[in-house]
Length: 303
Ligand SMILES: Nc1ncnc2c1ncn2[C@@H]1O[C@H](COP(=O)(O)OP(=O)(O)O)[C@@H](O)[C@H]1O
Ligand SMILES: [Mg+2]
Image (cartoon, rainbow, N blue to C red; front, side, top):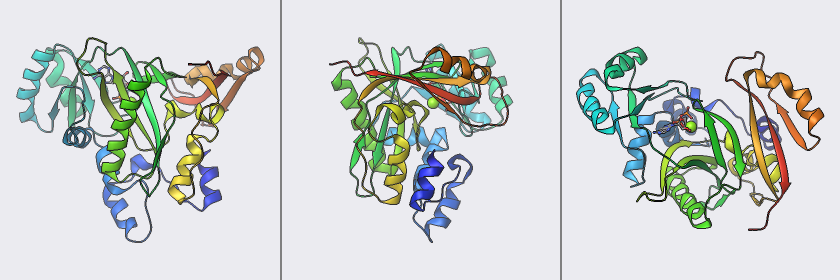
């Protein structure tokens, strides 16, 4: 989808996660590169990401960083006080991969099994998860899609539902956090920011989970429920074209087809004429692999 829009605008796309920040810098001497090298540095490495978010004064999960074996002592003390925590590889983790929930006795072994820098995050008793899908032009002007609520199982996004069951104030707060992140990065394009919504009695209503410098899985419903989708707006922003409306004309639920789920594509269409099906054409089925998604829209309920 993205590639179709991109070629129409003369934009060359590449797999962001696999390109080192130094390569972004080199290419930037010859051509505009969006997102920029600074974004790659921050978003490809959870330790850099935590430092960046902390430098902006944004709320994140309490955590310890593990960059070498000597850091195990402080991390063990952190874990003892946090009670439960998730060890995450600093780089190359996605869809819950490169993460494991650890108790004190398992920390050293799990860290050594990963064999790379990691962050150790307190497990947050969040109420729900939401994301902000935003688009920023080179001029700095930003637009936002309504926040979806995101349901994960085993660290993988199962479904996203919009509107999220949050107040307009909380949605605005999530959007201003995103605005600060995007401005600090000098970001151009669609940006996803994943957030934890904390229980009402928590003094901190939102905590940033992670930054996704791209069109985001939790924004796929924009293809069916918005005037202009996240895909088209991403390419418009990157190409310097005027942005399209992010307005949402329908409520929507987007369900990922993971692994064997995809085999049921024909039944999904047969049983529900209102379902929109997207198959990604990947060559093999593996458990938990994102192979497609289904979006169901409904007339917008008045709020
Ligand atoms: N600190 C945490 N506390 C509770 N749940 C978490 C925490 N970190 C991650 N998770 C759960 O795991 C999911 C995937 O983690 P995330 O850090 O977003 O990694 P990924 O890059 O795999 O998406 C989150 O969406 C959330 O459901
Ligand atoms: Mg995530």
